[in-house]
Length: 378
Image (tube, rainbow, N blue to C red; front, side):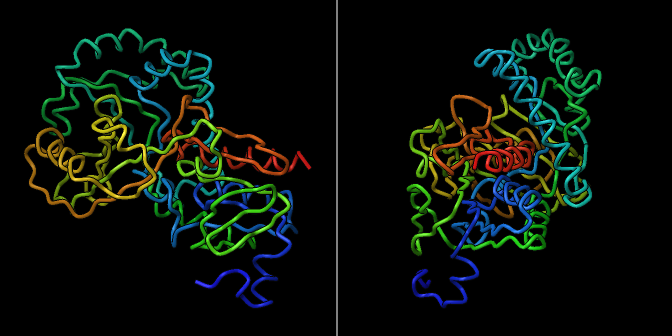
């Protein structure tokens, strides 16, 4: 690939000179930041750079869950972070999902609100029964945010309904759904092109020094810089509370008369699965090797994929023959809090990172808040 100083006058003039806003990362947050900047700065030169030939982070590799939190996750988060922090973050997720629908229309990314289930085995009976007593409190708090009563309900027929094995009971969330991740990324890309936002793939940001971004093809200068690389952000922001978290995913070949419909959380959310195109998409297993999965290396590992296949055979599809079609990995951004980091890092340099595995729900709202922050501080 040519370096910047080897490109033509025309290329430099159009793409690399006199940049008003440079966005690093073209996932949901990066695209959303650029589009919201365009609303308030119609004449500005906005450039997004992305290290891969496609978005490299979780935005294009996630499971497509339109979710805001299962009872087990919220209970754990309340214990670890306190009530106020948890409900503030949940409110952001719900608001973000609503805003995403308003921005593009639910049909543009195939949003289906089929509900979600938080699954429990007999071995987790004590945990399940304890959460039953907490359910009225969770519903009361969610009603304050959504205006909806009884968001969570008990479902002890879930195993028979979907032909699961080893499942004792579940909590059903009627407001959660699923999307087509590829369509969401495509609609962001097309909107950005339409809004005259330049998107340059194959350029990796190596470091940020003031208003100079050192990249794999040379240095790019801009008036303002937004770092939207989520799980990859530690390289550019070493002082921030952000770590990568790899998620491994597989998908089956099409299954005739597939019963499973909706999104499902299993073993405290460390495993998750859904239906898509008459297939099962199944991911997780990071709890098997948390240290090894704290990495930005985008590759799958045999032990985790083997565990996913085992659970497919024994729990999810115990009476249904299936074949694995494909597997992949994506990188999330996590830290000591589930709340995103949206801040000014230094003069004219900003970041919107740490989606905590909820980028589909919260990413568009984070981009909006990033753009507002960048527009306010001149």
